[in-house]
Length: 396
Image 1 (cartoon, rainbow, N blue to C red):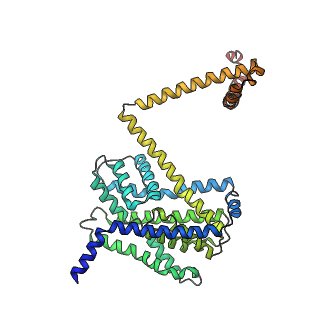
Image 2 (cartoon, rainbow, N blue to C red):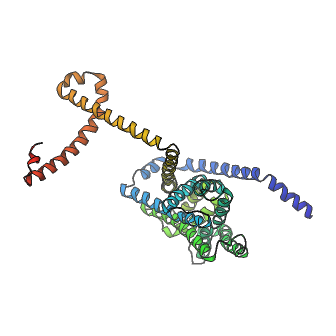
Image 3 (cartoon, rainbow, N blue to C red):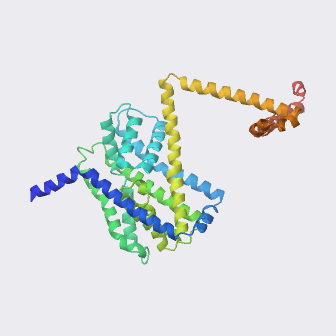
């Protein structure tokens, strides 16, 4: 019996990658079928009206709220560097943490992407093995906050009729609730060996960071619902969000894309939110919590990479770019000046020329707007000079 069990375990270990791929493929097929079903039931005119009816203020609040909601994740990086040799500036940790967390939000890949990026950013004094070990220690606490929220959601089902439509999902919440106690017990058992550099204070800091991370994501999601003026009590969103997050993690799909969204659409529908509003809600959540921070991370990454390349090549790329920018600006200003002189002296000849007609708008927008601003400020300065009876102010 023992031999059979060991052979089964060995077989699973050998084929684990294929089992994972099969499982994820099955999940993706299920998600695709559900997406097609939801898409067939949506009123696209209502979807369009809800999407483009948001005020500029609401969009700005979503943008700022999404960026703020990302910040708690940076606590992980400020903790990771304490487990590694070497000194790092706060600016470097902030940029590196932003890049890593926003990339892994989109990409996932079971921590592989996060470990690789952190090895790049923090590998100056530490080898890859040390970084992977440090990241692995931190990674087991990433879900501790969600686990605590699962306990809270499970406990909230005892409060009268609260969350009554979601009580049948209690096994998901129970499974999520068990994660944190098991991790905490495991780390205490191994506190003298594997986790000796994670004292209780540091563990509590990581748990607090995880609570902030999941709380910020949930709070931002509820904020979007408030801005969309959803016709529901937003406190009812709490158990839906927790259960959907657990489902998204179990699916092993990066960012829970599809699994989280489908469960949220059905869950929101059970408390009275139309599918059109639910889709818009999730679309704004994905854009402002995932996509925009990810593109900011790309800018940080390009800037950081460009600085390293420039440094490696003794500043030649920066000098080249400065020269090209200078040549372009000088050429453009000369070109614009000639075009303005032509239009002022021979307007009929100029506008009869098809090439001039095509090129003129580029100079018009540049010179008319910019020159007006420049001359406006110059006149204000001259007025002040004349008021003070400065002789040089009369010369222009």
